[in-house]
Length: 224
Picture (tube, rainbow, N blue to C red):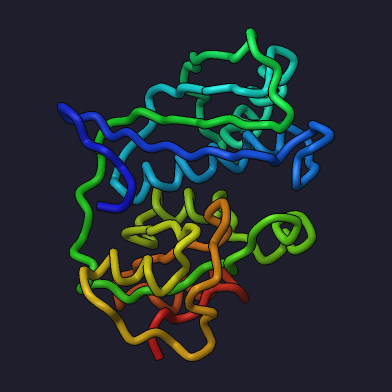
């Protein structure tokens, strides 16, 4: 388990963002499209971490009616880049009270389609670097590319993923393995992974060299 909820066979994952967007008092100013795309990115990565496939999306928009189509375009962009069919989207907009800062949440509902290998049977790597705020925009080349991840999962080059969130790589590894783990010295252990800018990737030992070639520079061992 990571952050997903499983109810009657349905996998439910979610992510939110606040004070990030196009409003004057937002702490990070980016297009609404980008905000929604990264929130959807996290919810989708958590579906994959649970072995799920998304079948529906809920958008919770606290920013106002004008922001809804911009948020939808960001979610659409994510699925288009991945070559995936866009699931149906519904949700709600706060239209009675005007907020001073942007806020949204993206919830995805899916079903389990993959049986997950035991974590200890795999070799684990960190793909991408933990980034937050403005660094997500200024160091985009260091962010885990979900297009590569999606293709690798479909082609069985990798077996599992585990998104890194605000608690950092060390805490995520502890949740993944159920105990504290020795972490490579190169890793910034407690830095927030923001909108899943880095992922833990589980690979069968026989496929490690191929995975290293495919994922490239920002794909490094979790342990020494």
